[in-house]
Image (cartoon, rainbow over all chains, first blue to last red; front, side):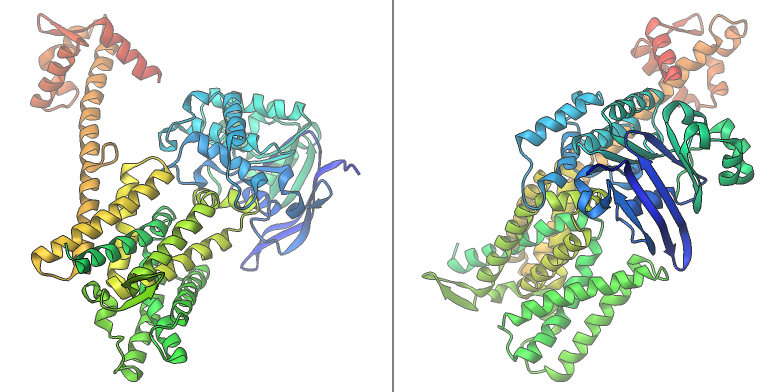
Amino acid sequence: MTYTYAIEVEDLTLAYEEKPVLWDIDLHVPEGILMAIMGPNGAGKTTLIKSILGLLTPAAGTVRIYGRPYREQRHLVAYVPQRGSVDWDFPTSVLDVVMMGRYGSLGWLRRPGLKERELALEALNKVDMSHLAHRQISQLSGGQQQRTFLARALVQDARVYFMDEPFQGVDATTERAIVDLLKELRAQGKTVVAVHHDLQTVPEYFDWVTLINVHRIASGPVVEVFTEDNLRLAYGGRVGFLTHSGDDGRER
Amino acid sequence: MTQLQIEIQLIGIVTAVACALPGVFLVLRQVAMMSDAISHTVLLGIVIAFFIAGSLESPLLIVGAAMMGVVTISLVEMLVNTRLVKQDAAIGLVFPALFSVAVILISRYAGNVHLDVDTVLMGELAFAAFDRWQGWGLDLPRSLWLMSVVLLLNGLLIGLFYKELKLATFDTGLAAALGFSSVLIHYGLMTVVSVTAVAAFEAVGSILVVALMIGPPAAAYLLTDRLSHMLGLSGVLAATGAVGGYWMARWLDANIAGSMAVMVGLIFMVSFLLAPRRGLLALVWRRRRQRWEFAQTALTIHLLNHEGKPEAARENRVTHLQEHLRWKKDFAGQVIRRAEAGALVVRKNGYLVLTENGRLLANKAMTH
């Protein structure tokens, strides 16, 4: 059975101490698109991704990946958390971090072996990092950290990719490389959902956009949804400021 | 060495290594102080289990202690989740509460039992060798049997779940998304810590348990770049601390457990100061070098900015430079000498002129 939607979210509500953080979110994301999740700080962008991935427990609503609950479809999903969410002083190498992407398909107890190593090296090659494979991760720049995380998502060989601010704090070359990679994923029929901040690059980087601010403002193809009116609804009066400078503020 | 001496050292080594292995994950997960809390609250588990079993040798004691460890963590996390108390304060509230209940219970109802608070805190390694068990044709101290089993279990569990522990410690979010329950791993680790703490504290006391769980991993952390090496090195450093501490105790005629803790502390100090890349001295050395490099770069940029312009005659004069860059005279002199030695600048009748190297450095610094 084939499903037209890669991701279906219905009535997703998440509350924190009775205060809604996400209010009745509906999403229907077709396969093979690059979608940006946008909204002001505190709009719940990260929260939305985390509740789709079952990292947070929603108060109400359902999430389906290719027609089935996330729990049953883990193997189809790759996740790139915010770069700042881990301790980069952890004693390990770049290659080792990338191999972690294979842990899910290995399951409990099974150790990564030669195959995992080769897949990891291949992915590092794709993000132009193979020369740094054995480097201690604390010695990486921000862009290299992000590439490492992307390589880790690539080895998961998923069909749906969730990325939390993949462009946050990276240099222009890395941003370019990431965009190329996303487009390559799309060409393979994969679906990418990314939390994004820079309004200016949306039409160039993404096909779809979902605007949220606690509740869903709009979701659909960029040409239809990415309008001045919708942006004003999502960002309020701050939209003028945002279109001119971009926003690299981090969500808490 | 007599057999007794060897046995005491063996107990020390096995205990130290058994503590250091789970300690690595406590240090990396930044919950080191949990070991302090657990090593104290397990006493309550022991006391309650003792009242039920009526014996200090019952395996129920270890079960009780392990359960109390988990209770401790749950209570701390419940407090933290209310967001009314921060984690360090929550630890500081929970463990004295449980520990004091244990102390009161002991003093009130178990006064005549060999379960005095001093032993709990300090341990009595010197006497540990007298309490013996026979098995497999071997006649060895009970503590040695017990700690060997714990060491074996710890090694086995960490070996089996190495991948899961590594992932959940480095990236909890991904671990959970991939279906490795972070809660399960966390509580599993804490149960291991509790069992280790209760087994170890009979021999070495609860304070030394903390030293052995945190000291060797903290030292190893500064010395390696890989988790597997950190585990191995923690074990080696812990064993070294145990043996060193034993001989120090003999030399000073002092408590063995205390001497082992001191030795572990010394090992940490040495690695803290002298670790090749992360040690304090390496850090100071690097900062000094960076300071001079930075000053020289600033000098070349300043010279480049005014090079070939009318004001160059004023700005790039050696004597003027000190006032202009707001550098003290000695410092400016040193920077210029170093820049000259590094062939970044040359002196031409009272002016500083950039060499090709110096120009390159300045350009590179500005375009970076």
